[in-house]
Image (tube, rainbow, N blue to C red):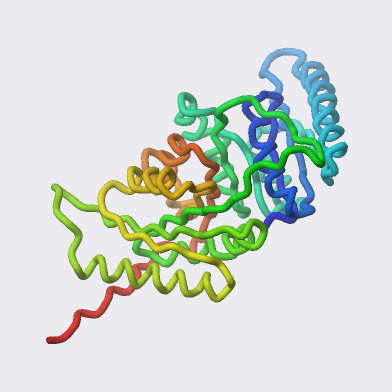
Length: 301
């Protein structure tokens, strides 16, 4: 999943905030990084001349980033093209057979604008490769080879619902676990209404689902912790991030047709807006849409 990482940049410090998180991976894997910059000329007269000037400035900027990364020992190249950011990014993902996209959002105050119908939401909705998204909190600098290593990914949180969609995340999770000796925290949140507790049957089904998923991961040498909570999913996920010192949250979406419902105003979008750790979003194919998990059989008396 991390052999070829596409990193979109737009010339801002906000976009560059993803670079240290990419370096966390590069410290442990000799991945290739493909920097991408889309140039969108304004719809005015002499737009061709303006586009040429913008392309020149973009190439100069990207050459500076490439030089800094190469000095740090990173295999890197760049692509600068005229076009819409989403289209350019997705074209490069396809052409380069990218295995992951890594990009920053515009922070808590701007994430709604940035996600809804814009670059991040478009890439997450359509990218065939997993997307590592991070909300920046401070200015970053590229760490040179031999410098202070960023904190490893010790604990990864995988929230699951009542479907088998979480199985889509297993290959990526195993890869991260192998690199960082990561423990995977499996979380199932049972939503309750009007303060009512979840039924014993629902809890038993949730526990069985987590047990089966843990068994699959543990067979691949991944340590797990299983949690069944009840209440609001967003609140419980953020609580688990704090309490279990989570370094990365992995979430699956429901593919192109369902992402607007899954992201806009719901769990994935809210977690990306509020979480203080990166989010790895893995899109399911249409045929992998939500399937109900089998319920635990009732015990006979």
